[in-house]
Length: 122
Length: 418
Image 1 (tube, rainbow over the protein chains, first blue to last red):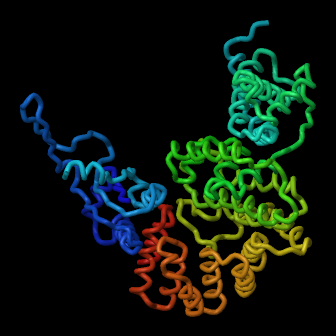
Image 2 (cartoon, rainbow over the protein chains, first blue to last red):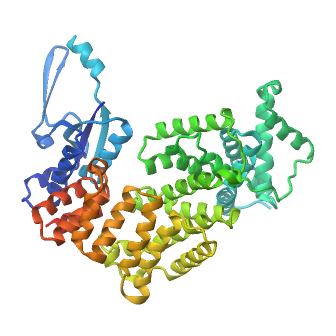
């Protein structure tokens, strides 16, 4: 079954994205990605640009509301996601603990919902 | 005389500490004794927590009883009996009725301070073959040590709800599955004891990896497992492997503070300063190892302890006798050919005979089995680097880094990778 690892990172982690090639956080992510691919469990995923590049849209009573910045105003922000194919939540939690973001931010593990996808796509 | 507010407060603190201390010392003994009668671990635990709550209410008022453990036992047993009466005595099982009968023999609600220590039976129940092996250690931590499910869940990297459910399921199985509270027969003892030792060592392993000690509320799991091994040893002093397990854990514990530099940096064993190792712990480990070998029955834990003993020897001689370690690993592989043993053997061979020979040992391991086994990749990376195979080494380093959970190890490997 598929699990999404939702990567929440503090501002320092977003700042480190512009660091040079030898940045340890970048190195840790490269290694983590390689380990996931080599383990044959990588389905997909992407990093996201910094939260301040986000724009949030709502319709309230038929009126458009556009807000600069991310949906939630928290210290740790969604920095990306990875989808993994794994036999169990236990295995997904192990991979979440290995994620470089786990020791500086947080990693939320959520099962992907193919049932709901089927209902949506018909 | 009326106590002032602050006097009262400090009296409360003392009582609280007393309850905590009694709970720590006696929890497993009380749960084991109560559940050995009823086979119902969950209600023994419930009854005991009720009794602890009552103690916190009664002791400040009436004073701490002369024998707090007996007080808790009597109160807990009363609560089980009340519960059974409430649930219709007609439905009560024979063991519970036995408990009721025993209670009626003691109308004044006192209990002899000496009640039999049933913890050994409880340990064997927790590691019973009918119980999911993954639950052996969590069950022990909860029933014998009284650790709460959330804490165990953190250590096992499982959600607290799931861990709670799994513990409940395992206890239901103990109650309803006819698992007997008994010391196994001679014939099956080695295998059954092995499961108990494995479960204790698993707790130690988790505590060992969890260096950062994220949860300050929790008592350290390595200490808890050493404590469990000591309990087991008191109950089975004649078993060589119990001495072996305790020796192994004490040798590792002796190096605890040497594993990190002052800045939190990871320090591998080969670079540790032996002056930072705890000599008393090493000496105690050696005594147990000697005790084990005098019983003339080798086993997995004694061999692992012997390997650690050779490492400890560096504190005295200044060098590591790698050929001796290699020999111990060869024996160990024969009885316990795990990935950990094979990887350790490869590292030892590399030190004794050179990196090429070590790499040859690694190459014999099935690649599919090591795709998520971090130590394999760390050793492989190290050996490839020593052989000057830089791109291959970098690749193996990445695998090792990507599989690491510990930020200090990750940093160390990133630096080594270059």
